[in-house]
Image (cartoon, one colour):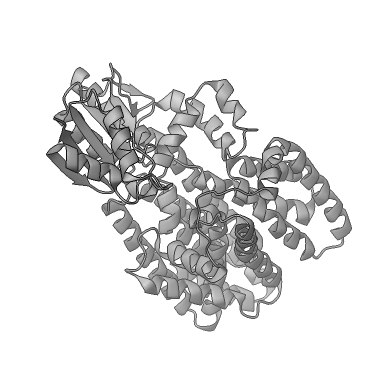
Length: 525
């Protein structure tokens, strides 16, 4: 299909304007079907297997923060270090309506991730109005992007961030081209919302300035005045966020991230953005993506020159900006810059169009190859347990523990994920049914079982074995059976002193290993 669209486009650009207009009119129905196909494919890939992966600790945090008392939730808008308060605020009524199951919790991201695909299509149409293959290729690649699919199935803000950044770019380009209060209002609201979803979207502001600089029309001076007025409105709306962000930048603290050099950042993003969270099996998908994006960047002419410059700025300036921030305080992880991925896919769409103009079938073949490799990566992600399987661990403990057993969590933060599943296991045993449905989403209701627990000791600060001995004796003095739930234990106890103490002073009665989690029961004398 992509090859056919590319060939039709090549003919229309070489024909008289009247013939090109006729062909554009004839293609409207086909373009609508292509947009519908991309959106439907995106939804199908994102909703399929939604509860397969166990919720990891950040996803359980989304549930915890969204359901806390409203006053505490609103306090997150001004509390230092609290990222994404608007996401939690909007997630709250959603969970009230559909319940707190894995499916309903993640479906919020499915909606945002699906909506991003027609937004990519719309932005592609604005950046290349006379090149249908650009918008078709970019939207289809966005639909099957393994990285976008993954984060559209996670109960975090990243899918919504992509959606908001795309909407902000669409409104900005429309406002710069023809003005209008509604367009500027949309830009202000969506940009501010994106910052309240993830503060690193501030790195898009230099991209917006580049779009202003490459604008070529008679109203450039007026557009510049309107843009800076709109930017001032954005700043006014995010003053609560700036109240703690600026002091944090000026007085950095240890955030637990290791420093990553710029070449390593670029390499990490290239691999994960092309192959998803399980990279390495299909390296040629990265090669195809690089060929297509390089073709777009090479010798852009005419209307494409400004679009390619804007997309290149969108792709590289936030990366450079984050690297400069890491020189002050290490902060890098690839998902923090997920909002630059649509720029790469739009460049790939332009690459399809440019290659197809030279060899009409080659662009479609390359796009199809990239789609196939992306679908394979999506399938691998869907079939491979990646996140710590706290669901199975909690189920195992709940069905094997005695009523007076104590559970030790190493790391302590694993308790929240464990309790989420532990309560559902005990609820299921007590009620024998899921408890009905709310708006077609299954509910779980019933009494929860109490859990005796303690935090594992933090020994990475230099705690000696003798200190561990005294602390463990004191904390487990009244315990007969003790469970150790070890998930990412090295973050808290790199030397394994807690487990070594249990091995030396208690008898192992049962042990089970799951993805990312090991549970062991010890019988104390």
